[in-house]
Length: 62
Image (cartoon, rainbow, N blue to C red; front, side):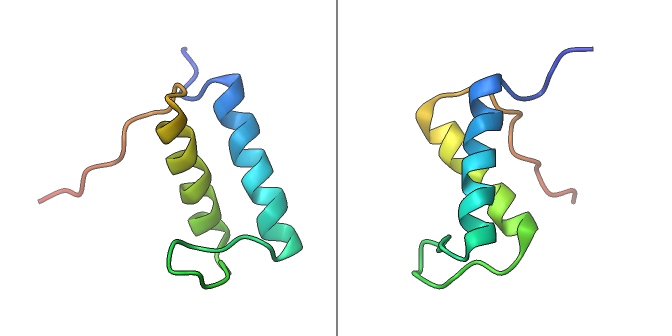
């Protein structure tokens, strides 16, 4: 089974989670992030912007 995320993408999410745990992570609106799921989403989004191998975004079902 293939990995969904590259090593570098996993490292990026790890860095973001450390920021979250220290209370330093902020959303794009400038507010502090309080939800771990949101922190992971931010990490994956930043990894995508860098062009790292990340699974595509989940599309909402209709």
